[in-house]
Length: 174
Image 1 (cartoon, rainbow, N blue to C red):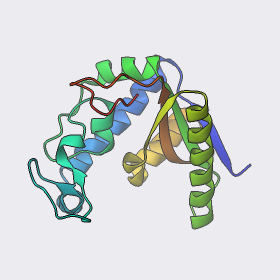
Image 2 (tube, rainbow, N blue to C red; image 1 turned 120 degrees about the vertical axis):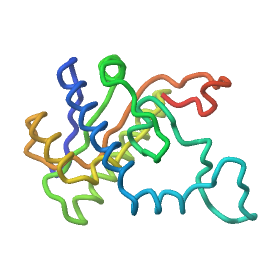
Image 3 (spheres, helix red, strand yellow; image 1 turned 120 degrees about the horizontal axis):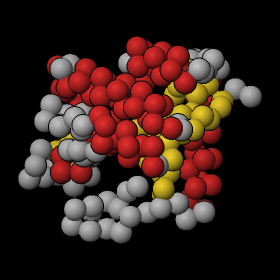
Image 4 (cartoon, rainbow, N blue to C red; image 1 turned 30 degrees about the vertical axis):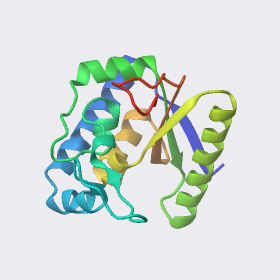
């Protein structure tokens, strides 16, 4: 099989993942080119684009929690590692990886992510995906080593029960 999944289990693995995610978030926060590109894809608070123009609303970006380390803006507060590790340990986090790192491997990993997401939603679960931290080769390599993978990590997927939409959690994400 060209794509495999590996669940994160236990406190040591959760902490290792969190440390790598925090490293990636810090690296992206300090990367001027990354921040410039991210700003091109986002609308500033209160900014409205014309009809048909695309952009992620700044207010929809996470400022804390696991989502914050996945897409770090210059204003993102990187969460406390121990708190985030405890949260990951309680959740279901899957590392999707492939045998290689060529275009076909990326496509196969994407197909596996799609299938997992469809299976989860058909079972009434919510899912979210994180790939940005894995764009850093040192993060991908360290994750593979820490988890004993002979494959290349391509995505991190979280699974859980959908949260009720509340003022503090408008998106109702896991």
